[in-house]
View 1 (tube, helix red, strand yellow):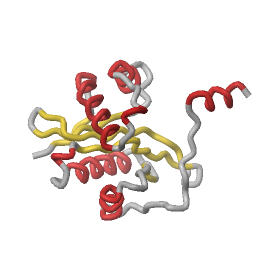
View 2 (cartoon, rainbow, N blue to C red):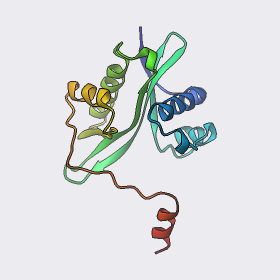
View 3 (cartoon, rainbow, N blue to C red):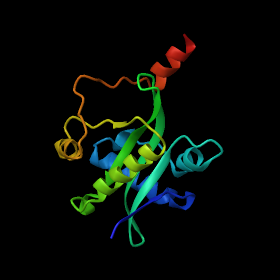
View 4 (cartoon, rainbow, N blue to C red):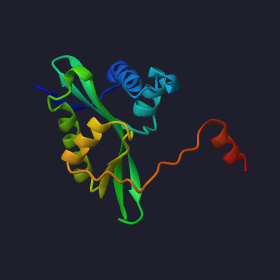
Length: 158
């Protein structure tokens, strides 16, 4: 039995452990610099920037979804951006990812959001197939643009 629930501050160590596991899975561990203190500040501090729902089995945290609000100027409505959805590899194929996505879709509809969107790595055929089975459009005509580090600082100084 899996239950989905909003994360509490006491869940920060589990959330960070899942983020590390996600970074390993995506072959991006060399980019992971976040700390538990960062998560505690940004999820549960005076100005929360994101929210997390957790998948739990008994006392074990086996998956998570981290998300935040965005806004669609075309729809004239808020949306939810799913930054990360991750289920421990040994717990995949048991409906955990689906339960997390369903819970997030319910949050979006309850909050009057016009859409729920996310990105997926182009090599992750398993995830792409899962998202398509859930009814998601995989939008090949859009590309992610990103400024980080020195490039971000340079633009800010312009």
